[in-house]
Length: 432
Image (cartoon, rainbow, N blue to C red; front, side, top):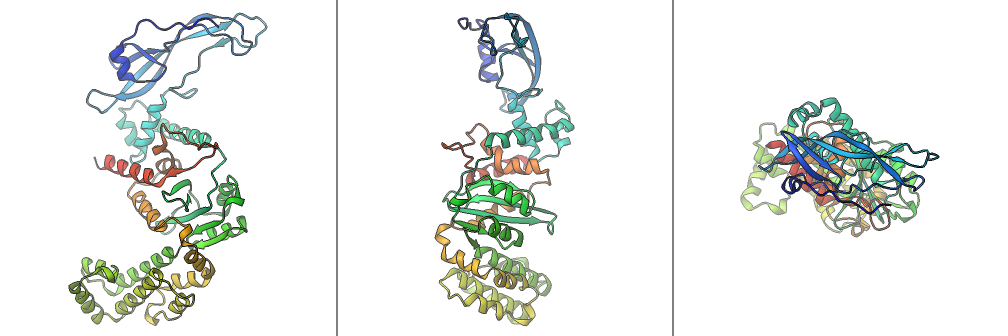
């Protein structure tokens, strides 16, 4: 191959603003910036490795985004100037060749960083709003195509070989009475908590596909919620693993039942008093305790529900005998049985798995369910979106510019803390 030749003239200040690796800015005109690969040497043929000759100079225009002088995104037309080369070997199958680029995907008319920006905007805006945000440089139809391609590329980049944790978490969440549902797959034994995947449907086939990307023999414990499909899939696919049903999910369903009692039987009770009734009794002062007493004395069903809720709270926060929770379920007050039916059924169905969780709780990330519930609450603040955008928000936006795999070549997942930081950033942008 000939000795590399470097481009001799370019605009340094403009190039620093453009800031694209392996590309230098050679000039600008209005909203257009012209740029080239600084290496202008003629390459050898990548097929036969013989000499090639310069076939001519060409241009392709990409829609790009760069940082403006005011620190805000500036949308430009990036005129990429490049050479094509012809192989001198008549027997070679290659006719024309151009050096590969890294700043844009094949056949795309936007740069990779423009795609990143579009996906970020789509995380909290409609496609039509994204089109307006980027000054109609890309249509809303193209926005959808770009997002689908972006997520597919990220899926390909992470590959089909996942790190296999000792403690795997499969916890489900649902919105709008089950209209929207998803499963978070996580490393539930790691202190920092890593999220492997987001499954946008609660079904056995999707869970099976996920588990087939892991070495099942390395998974010793599986932490789940009380969703029958999730628990059944874990039992079937991981017969040698111990299933642990998170007791926080049991308590959360009991809280939901008590909220229903408050909704029906304490309709006119001030909101701050309802919040007080949901507070851990150990965290309230004497005056607040008297307020609770006045409320419960006037409302027998609220009183029964309040006492039974906090009895379970006490059981789950201290060492308890294996018969205590069953006794709690058997002694649900008659006037509260419909509201506490779900936790009662959970205890009956997942008794062994609930006990497993208590006995193996040191194998599980502390406050696991509460952390994921906090994440879920943040996700609910966004507008409804496509599956691709939903997965992008959780899995990939905070991984831009970072290595997707660990040293062994496996997808390690994304740290929970990074996801939360990204969601906060997106919510702040949405409010602005």
